[in-house]
Amino acid sequence: MTTDRPDARPTYPRTIDSVPTPRSGVPTAGFGISALSARAADVPAADEPERRSRAVTITAALLAVVAVVAAVVVFRIMVPTTPSAAAEDSGAARAATQTREQPGSVVGYGQSHTYGNGLEVAANTPQRYEPSENATGTDQGVPVKLLVVVTNRTDTAFRPNTLQARATSGGQEAVAVWDPDQGIALTGPDMSIPVGATIHFHLAFAVADPADLQLEITPALYGYGAMVVQGP
Image (cartoon, rainbow, N blue to C red; front, side, top):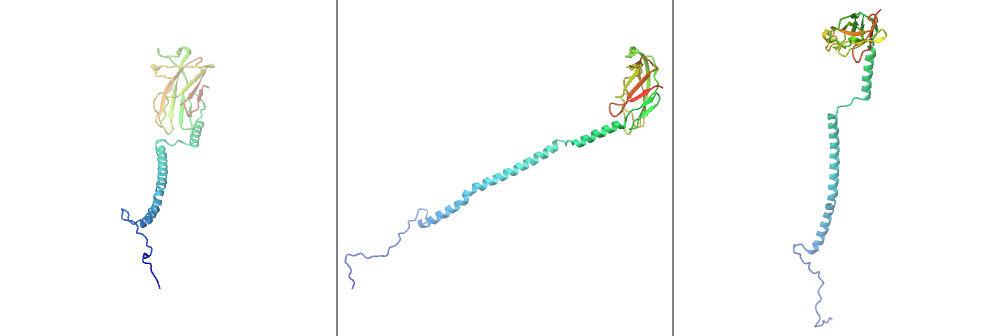
């Protein structure tokens, strides 16, 4: 038999107090789950600056490569290609070969010498002559003049305006005479000789002995050896 105390209070099962609802309307018990979800979502957000930094680095590297390539292309366009040392040596060797292929020789007056490229040069026997009043160098000996004949049998035009002539007489160097009034210069005329054409011009010297005159003619500054002309 059970007896109850009149003042005893009834005992009820213990219940969980209701979770207060925040202002947002989301229960507090669910708030913990939401916080965990937000924290989990924050992980990728923390990695975002690293990914952006990596992307910026890659982009900068690509831009640097493009800039280098562009600089190389511009340099190649603006700066002409420099011939290699081998090409320069080949050109020098070819020029030296051409010079060796066109040596001078010793001939007599009235005889011609033909160089390796086909240029033909001859000098006629010197003759005494009367210089004009405007001639220079005539007081250094007996004035003589001679006719030089140049025939261009090469494959290009030839200009005799750099022809050089020296003479010796009686063991002394003769003095070149300039006589413009008679068309006598110190070198050949400044004109182009076409292929197959011939030109004549005079040179003059003041010599010690007209019977003993040796002439040395070099047709141009480069590519020709000296041609020696002498009497019998």
